[in-house]
Image (cartoon, rainbow, N blue to C red; front, side):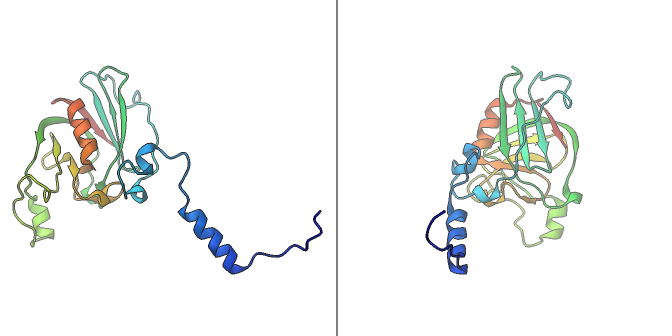
Amino acid sequence: MSGFPRKRPSRRAFLAGSAALAGAPVLGQPAFAQGAVAGVRRNISGFRILDWRPYFSTLQGGAILVDIDSRALHFWGADGRTYRLYPSSVPLTEDLTRRGRARVVRKVEGPDWRPTPSMMQRNPEWPSYIPPGPDNPLGTHALYLNWTYYRIHGTHDTRKIGRKSSNGCIGLYNEHIAELFSMTRVGTQVLLI
């Protein structure tokens, strides 16, 4: 035991120590959460690696699983060894969310965008068309699903990733959709759970 009397920490010392801890880097987070995409760590949701076997009978053509609750997209390649996990944006509300099985029917690099009729009703001030480019809400690449108006696409607005922020689509960082785009082919199975 020390010969010095124990002092109770002051409120000021407690607050300063708490602020220092809050600013410290979080250990053990995946690389993408530590700044691979600068300035968006706060949007990353709690990810979990999923075993594909309960969801798909085969990986022929690859498989995409979107977990709406954890805001994550999982990809398994047809080779059975390739696996990717991407943070995603998901629909704002449950009524905009569609779950079930779909497939990729079209791939577009540099997509253009037109809001759906229901989007125009909710947001009449929106433009009726946006060409490819930095203002396009579909980002740099889009995977069109066999469900009308539903896509897995990139976004130039990185604040949306990891959040409920879309009108129904699944959004990825542009660098992630570019990678997924290169590994996915028309016919790839998709499951939203």
